[in-house]
Image (cartoon, rainbow, N blue to C red; front, side, top):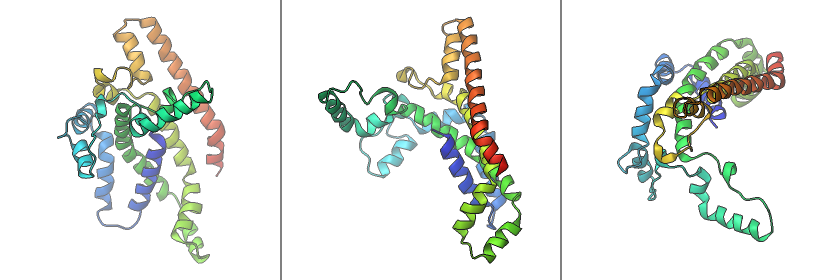
Length: 252
């Protein structure tokens, strides 16, 4: 949920900051600050921003756009699609039942809970700045001669970005994608701080589940086995990504 948005935002921001603009160094520092800010402190701030009360910052913004039914944010365990299209989904499921289908549009198909989406927003806000810095380093490694040759051929700015910048940044994008998957699968601190009892297990990610098995259930052997399983899953995903995307990205 977070990795494509992080990559897209980071590449867009890095490309803009790489241009000759005033105060570019200040903006680079500003975007990098979330990455070095203590996760626990920022998680508490996010809990305040996405408080279910009408006076919270998130609900005040929605009120400004005319939204009357304000969400509960971190107290909401219902899936996002249910909140947005509840009646339409019920009608669709009823139609499936009438047609004799054994399948219903529910469970995983309805997407994550709204509380988990808030945690995902935290991840995007935190790691986009780090990705920006890495992309800026990659942009600095692209020779100006390539762009000058494209200018001679009459290429537009969009054509240079699409046919030169993005392909030459493929190794950087691959590296950030690998790091993003590993970080997403290991997410713990901010989810643990922002999780509330009201959402039940709607915010349980792998690390939270392992922690609960170890700390709350005192089932140390099962927690150890789950940790090894998580490591194996991360390793397999990394190997698959390296086989499918790695060679193509590194070979250009």
